[in-house]
Length: 130
Image (cartoon, rainbow, N blue to C red; front, side):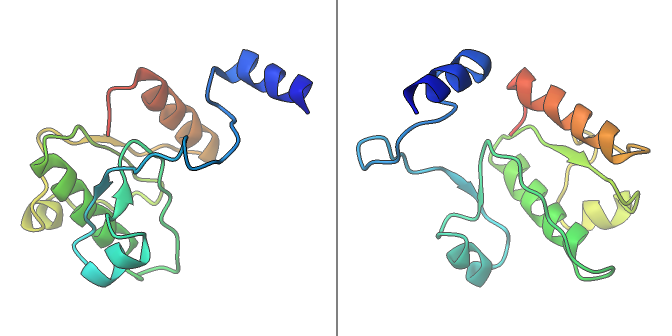
């Protein structure tokens, strides 16, 4: 086990894998979703800041609207946000009505899932988005 852990840390960096004990547990800051009941269901703080969050569900189930509420709240808190619009459905007018500053929103509408993941990975590695 120690050999595998060392290999993972060598390839992905210190802290990529660790034993979960109360000394290493850190409270993660969240971004409110705009729905108190959803925030509570997610642990009380909303969507975890600094983490990749995928929202999925059937067509017209509110995925984009939820994402836009989170984006607006992150921006209000001074965050830099990137939105990977895999479904190509983002409506800037609706986004503005929900409080999104579209002029500072980074958006990508990739043609393939592979592009979406590569763009997401590049943004994560830049450590410059929330």
